[in-house]
Length: 190
Image (cartoon, rainbow, N blue to C red; front, top):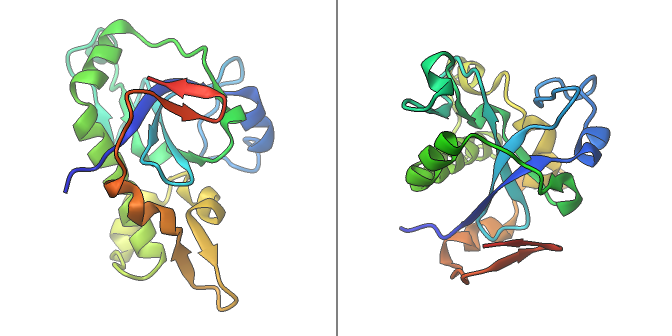
């Protein structure tokens, strides 16, 4: 099955970091002088997936750049474990700047990146809603340092029995056709 999606590079805004302060959300990446650049993935659900660019990724839950200037001296790439889930477009800033060669590597591998990022997210969702429970060691390895638990209220609706229910919109994501331009709030993806 082919998944339709839109993507764009953004920087997480100061409003995002005000609403998710590092002392309360330590697994969300933060640099005091600037926000993190991320690729925003929209699968036409009622939320957006933001995967940050990082200079150092020392685990396998990410896309690693191999032929870029930074990757010659760092383990740079896109870190799936630090993805954040947002619904508010005020959390996005258009002033993202990334290296040209990393941008080219991202574009050349965008289908793989989206597939892997959404697989990482779906595995987390399936574990939390009980449809595919991970072995405790695998959960510890893959999700103990993840930012995803901070966004359970967005990813799931909780019923009175505290069972997780995935938002209905996600199941429709694969069947939605793309336009050449896509509007997210007041921000236009092209």
